[in-house]
Length: 159
Image (tube, rainbow, N blue to C red; front, top):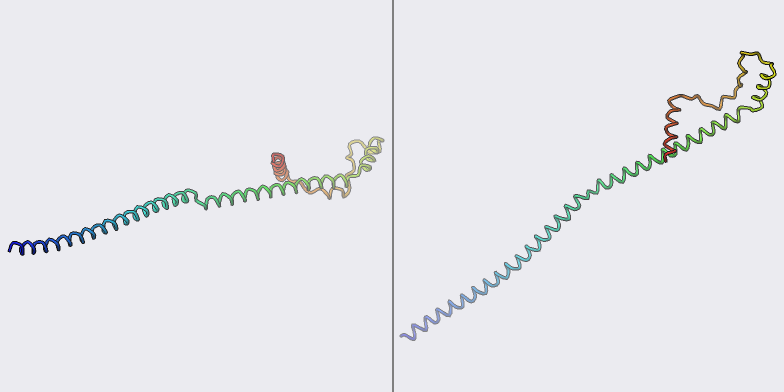
């Protein structure tokens, strides 16, 4: 009786041990699964941190402000080029006006008038005769325009 009772206990213990072993294997597999899940989550967290840092760096760079800075620089360069071209035109126009004045005024006429005045042919107090039709090369000069032209010439000298 004793042997049969021990045998039944042994059979029960074998099933309990088999259950424990299978549960232990199941627990080990779950532990392994948890470890791999932990490693995966850790890698994902590190990736998220890196992505956050990259996004912050890109946010600080702000490409639109860099592009707008280039646009401003381009506008300044265009303005400077336009100003230089305008000054070039002003200086050449002024020189052309001076040459036109020199070409229209006759030195011989002036010399003849001076000789007449010295010889006494003209009366004292009378104004010398003006030049006829020789002032057509000189445009009308306005004081504000002249002031602005002088300022532009000063800027040109500074460049």
